[in-house]
Structures are given as C-alpha cells and as structure tokens.
Length: 637
Ligand code: NOJ
Image (cartoon, rainbow, N blue to C red; front, side, top):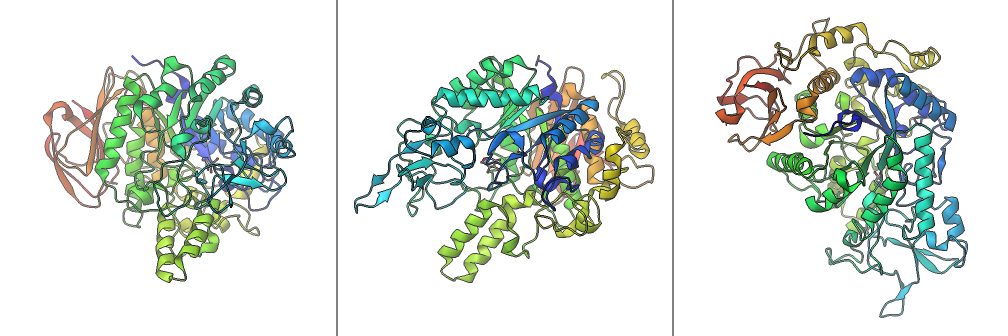
C-alpha cells in the first residue's frame, strides 16, 4: 500500500502576502505584511491547515507581484524583515505547522545583482548566467529577435528583450523585467542550491517551485510552430517546457539538497499533460520532486491561453480529475488537489454559480469535492469563505496585474475604437483575470473589510460583497478586528479553537477505531451552538477534520469513478482498507435524477449534504434525485 508521509496528509494553505492582511508593519501602507500572516496562525490552525505556503515575499521591484526576485535571501521591506519571517516560522512550529517557500528560479528580476553584472558587458563573468543571443536580420534588413517565441505575460510581444548597451537580446519568457537564468551553467545551479539550503536551514519545510519545468531550454532556441498565423510571435513552450535536461537538473537538486532534509516539493508545471512525462518528474523512485500542479482543470476554459471563454462541461472536469486520481498513484506518483491559486479566478464563480441564490451551495460543493479526493490538498486564501470574482462594473483602472493590463492594452490597440470589442474584452477579464484572486481577503464587514486600517487605501480594491461575505461572519471565534489582531500579537499562543468551534469539532471529528461508525450518523449541517446552519467556512473546517479522521480513505484510499447515467453528476467511490465512501456532485443548477448502480455504489447511509437540511430521506441505490448544486457523501455498504 501507499507509503505514508507528512506532506501527503497535510493541508496546505496558500497566502498571497500582498492581499492577506496588512498590520501596518511593512513599509507600504495598504499592502499585506508578514506580521499579518503570523497574526492569523490560530485562525489557520482552527480551520485545519498544516502548512502555509506563501507566495514570494523576497526583495522585488514587484513588476510581477514578487515573482521577479532581486534578492533571494532578503525580504521586501513592503512585507517586513527577515526577523519577521523567523517569527512566522517560530509561530508555525509552536502550533505544529510548517512553512513552504515559493522558489522562483527559472528567472530573476532584472534588478538582481546577478543580472546587473550579466548585462554590464559581453565579457562579464556572469554573462553566461542568462540567455544572451545576437540579433537576427529579416528580409528587409531590420533587426529581429533570435526566434519567434512569444512572451507569456506580454501578449503580442517577443520573449526576447533587446539590450541597447551591449547590443544583444536576452531571453525573458514572462516580462522584460524577468530574465531567464541559464541553467546550462553549473555556477547558476550551484547558486540556486545555495538558496534552497538557506531557506531549509532557516526552518522552511520545502518549496513550491515556480514554472520549474521551464528551466531547460532546447539548445539552439528553435522557432516555435505557428499556431496563430496572424501573430508575429508564437507560444514556444514546445521548446522550453519539459526540456531535455529537466530531469538531470531536478535529480541534482534532490541529491545535493532536498534528500538531506525532511523536505517537501511541489512543482508548478504548465504545459505538462502527458502522464509518462509527468511521472518522470514525480514517481518516487525518480528522486526528483514530490508532486506537481497539473493545470488541466484550471485551464478547462482556456483556448489555449487565458483570455478566452471556452465552453466546458461538468463531464470534462470529472474526466480530468478521474484520470489524474488514478494514473498518478498507479504510476508511483502523488496528486495535488486544488481549484484556486493567485493565477486563477475564483472557483465558485468559475465552476459553479456565484449568484446570491447558489453561491454558498456552490462553494460547499467544491469543498466537499476537494476534501474527498486523494492527494495533498491546497487551499487558497479566501476560498474558505467562498470569495468570488469582482463584478463586471469595475473600471479597467482597477486591474493591477501586469498580464491583465497588457491584455487590455493589446485589445485597445486592436479594437480600433470599436466599443463592442472592449465590452467583450471586459467580459473575458471578468471571468478569467488573475486579479480576481488578488483582491484583499475579506476578514470582516468593517472598513476595508478588515484588511487594512480605515484611513489607508488598500493596494487593490476590496470586492463589493465584503459586507455579506467575510471571515468574521462565517468563522466562530474569529470576529476579531485588525485592532484585536495586533493586541493579540504580543500575547503569545492563544487557545486555537473557540468554544463553539470546539463543540462542533467534538460533535463531528470521530474518535477511535476506523471500523466503527466513524462518520457522524447525523447529517450535515450539525447545528452550531446557536442553531445556525453551517457557513462555507464551517463546512470547510468540518470537511478538513473529516478528511483527516478518515485519511486512510480520503488521502490514501483508491479512487473509482462511478458511471451514474447523468453526465452532469460527478460520482465516485473512495475505498480504504476498512471503510469506503460514495460521493455524488451535481454540477448544475437543475434538479437532476440519476441511476446509482448497485455495484459498487450501494450506500448504507447518506451522511453529508451541502444543503442546510442535510441529506434527508434519499434512496440508497437505484433512482436518486439531487437538488441544484447538491453534493452528497455516503458510507458505502
Ligand atoms: C507562475 C506564477 O505563479 C505567476 O504568478 C508568475 O507570473 C509566473 N509563474 C512567472 O513567475
């Protein structure tokens, strides 16, 4: 059976520090800070989080919000100091939690000392730390880049940036301010290993590795296949994603650094679709990295890039999830579960219906799905209260992300004054932009949603619905305002679970043998002490507790997709050594009915529904009806 490991069972919570919580301890008012993260550790512990992964808080000009790093071993003053990070790590340790670092080493900032040296002259010893190439000349004698690769965040631009002073191009796959490191150079690799050691020795447990499958470029930088005949530049990932020396570089990191620590790694691998290729990176016996983020689901409505609205069906999501749930584990790898991060719009908007009528149900449906799938679970800040995309009515001046801003500019250039084209662009942005994940976390219904003090303007606008949707309204015991949070900071470790939450947890989290009636025999929601139905936050808290109490099934068990005669219902069975569960998820706003095959889907009891009244009287097999956006969990007979 599957080997156990802390990194498989852990619940990881991603913080986007600029938008998490601003205590005013950083250098920039209205900007989140590290003390803000530290002040919420009891909150995260109470939710059921084990590991905090923070997006980069290192020194950075913030062209790409920290994914352009100018010093890997220092903290950006906007976020605080190294001492603040030490305090964060200590606070996590006290609570038996861990910190995962965001490692961005495919590229640096153009302000990094390495690049400053590299660009200083063609003969500088660090010249070969980056990808420099002479210009080419086109048929008309004009200077052109070395090849036709497009910039990923630049739309319409070349991936190569011209350097006037040394008269060569350098490769910059994301923005001109993010030059790609040249991993062919062993000194570059040694410098990267040194960064990893620095953070592991400081107490980090491991790394989320940014675009890690881009580090090996095809020698000679061949032209990309033409996909967009009208564009000058083409997606070139066939020549730089999963490149020829990727495995060698990853094995080297593992042998020289990772294997010396009890570390955990998750690789970001865009354009990784092929099972065999993926398993070469994550199969345990390869000694590369533990797991990756596969983007098939969050790309389900891309065509093939972000700014389009491709139609998708619930069946597509079900098929993708089922495939990775089985293939990765069978191949000796390990899945990661996630629907959100800082690069994608909000899941409740994207995969369900975020209108007032269905939003809570939708968020809970996705929580039920994620907490019952196999693999390591990643939750993104705000997802636990069902934060949604900001509305269409926002002015374009609210878009802060470089990718959105570039897209908007491009569409303005292309529209030739045609307003309807801009209306369409706005509609696409409202569905797909990265900005939606970056609005400040809604902590309360107070000024600035409790993200920063009243007299300060947050760096990004707070979503309009913060009065109704916020942590204070949903999480018992976490009504504290910013002021309380700063008071608490000096006060040491507080009891992490409020009385009300503790009572609910006692009710719910089963104790003892996994053979007994380990799932509560009463239905969701278990009324809180006030007799209120469960909030989205409470549903997540309960779901995470449930997942841990039954980890043999939900984390380590096998996954079987069920054929249930209705394509809009995602149905599966999770099977452990001693118990098994059936999950039915209705991905539509309609009442649906389906035939539940007796074998292997027979249930002995439905125990959880995302509806306030619980599963009520429902058939255990045969014909079953699900309400709009309803999810059911049952014990398998
Ligand atoms: C992926 C990161 O998640 C994204 O935010 C960033 O823009 C690119 N990598 C480049 O670092």
